[in-house]
Image 1 (cartoon, rainbow, N blue to C red):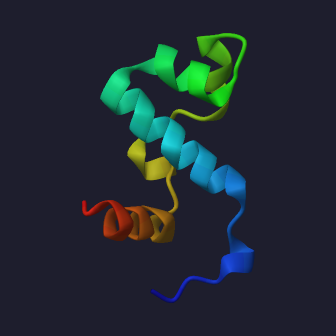
Image 2 (cartoon, rainbow, N blue to C red):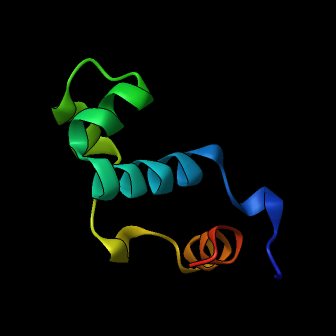
Length: 67
């Protein structure tokens, strides 16, 4: 897929996972799974709009998850 592994950090995947969980099951579950003290921390640091997700990361997750 042309992905340079050194270019991507676990934070990118953590944010992508948080966004997927939030959309599917809500902010409370996303916050709990990420180990945050409250939902506002999750909202501020991990959950955003789709345009915040790196395009290559989104394509990779689509390929892996069958999206």
